[in-house]
Length: 125
Image (tube, rainbow, N blue to C red; front, side, top):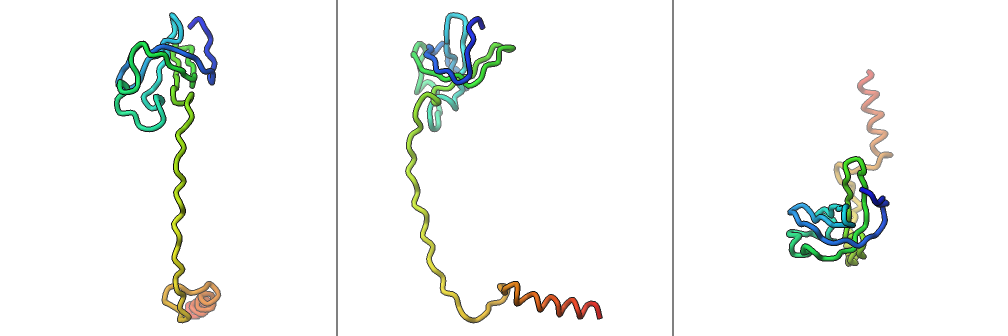
């Protein structure tokens, strides 16, 4: 890599090759980067060929640079605005009727505390 590419910079490149896992983007005469299939667009991509063709000019953002191995990770979707998602309305809870009679299994701590003290005293005797 003769040219230094910085993480976060947005560049224009050409699609040089397509594989099932991603697309290779030529950034200059000597340097290529990979756009992983998950970075093609927002949402699910089943087949890259439905979105890109060899020779297409694309705008990409540099995600990472591994100078030691000469690898550059790129993203097309990072250059696009995410689609707005519809906000779901929270479910309305229906008020439940509370009976005045105590039900088994659900006692307040205050009620149970005295019962536990009594049980403890019986065990000690």
